[in-house]
Image (cartoon, rainbow, N blue to C red; front, top):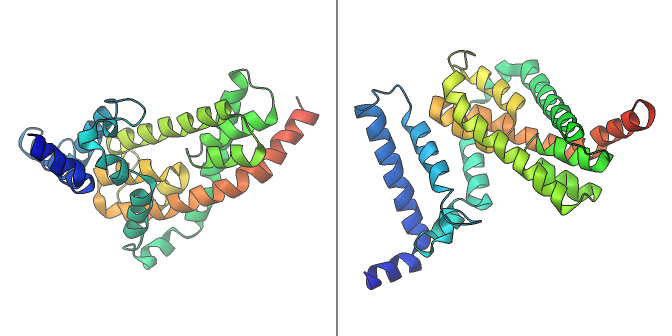
Length: 251
């Protein structure tokens, strides 16, 4: 056992790939043989992953030495690489079909998420514009939040709240997307483009669409990635100035 543990610790990333592969294999087996595809295998794998994240301390399962390689596999480098890789398989002609709807969904999604988060921050008792803007940005994505907070000089506590807000949104999107997909008719690439623009949290959109229909992932990932970049531009500038105006002349 000591020799095996040493081999695994030395090849942590390879073991992480193997471990995730086993989870995927088990999840799709359960979906096919026990649930008759009523719950997609990817959705089951995501739920297992969320459950395993509660193990360990701050780093989740990767805090356990045997699973240290998961910290690299689940890190931002592999995440961003995967997002770019999936977006590369998108059919440009189908993206163009979304046209104006895709662009409108981006601006509408960011605006609604930001001001909803800002309102919640205000109701929580925050009164300074910087804190409200940072938490509102976190409601867009957990990346936009800290970027905005760092640009405006928000406190570490507020930045942490903005990240937590974005993480909750990601988890909610991941779980709920395959559940409500048929009800909102999320069935083709054009719908996925608009969906990614409205929701924006890339990790949640990609995971949710993977659990719904993996063919939709590139299209949702594309606009969701633009969402993050656009949010990083709008939140610490135009939206911050808008809240400053509201705070000075209306409230």
